[in-house]
Image 1 (cartoon, rainbow, N blue to C red):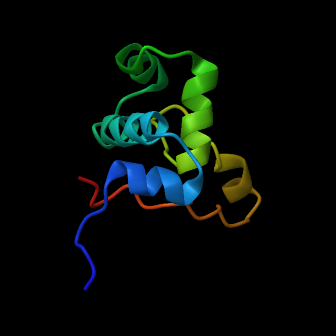
Image 2 (image 1 turned 120 degrees about the vertical axis):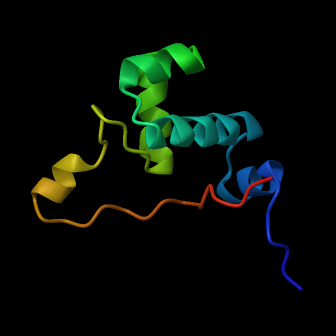
Length: 90
């Protein structure tokens, strides 16, 4: 039987990350869905631009004014798949 949701710690262990980084990515994904830009996301997460960009790249999160894999898409290449889905976490 497969559980409908996974724990944050389980997801972190799957990809070799910390629980804190997965929580940050979940929050950032919600901000991106609300149309947040990088400045608003940095303020909400209280992090630097470099940290924000690292999380966006690792978890494939696009913000309004920062899309980490836009260069690949412009060259006609496919963007990489995210290491893990951040949906159904609880």
